[in-house]
Image (cartoon, rainbow, N blue to C red; front, top):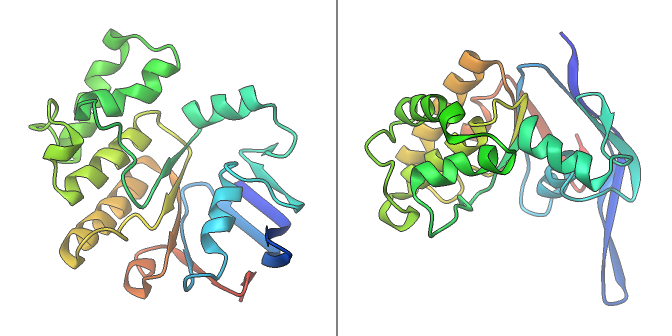
Length: 223
């Protein structure tokens, strides 16, 4: 089994006024193909900063991140954008859906931006939405959905490109206990069905327990 992601000696600091705070203190990390990894830590532990760096949204001060064999630090903006459209996806704590687009339009958006034609993608998208329990909500707008439905729509959008890696930032953080459990069971099923690697940040011990492996962070380090 090969690595889909490796991080070496990742460091990151933020400056607030005259005070510099070191958020990541030399993190080494790897994820295998098809693995479900939970990064667990309290607020301020550095877990979300690490996730954003692993996904190429932010850059480290030191160290390197290789995603699918390519160093994110040396990629052009165009190549990184292409990888985001085709090779990996990101699910935010709050669904981050486009409010004036329907469920179907939100899910199809990444593929259309990548130049795909409606006729090429429709059957695949309908299958994903049906699988996620949104088959009757294709024409609904985000404001018409429950919190759980909104998050399932965000997950559907992440799946639409058939990515090799999905990053998830507190995907159950805005949900109640029951809807959170449903999303976690859904993520396990997606992981087993598609062999996509899942890298999830959470502060919940219960939700981290769904993963194949738990990585604990404290004070900017993996403990």
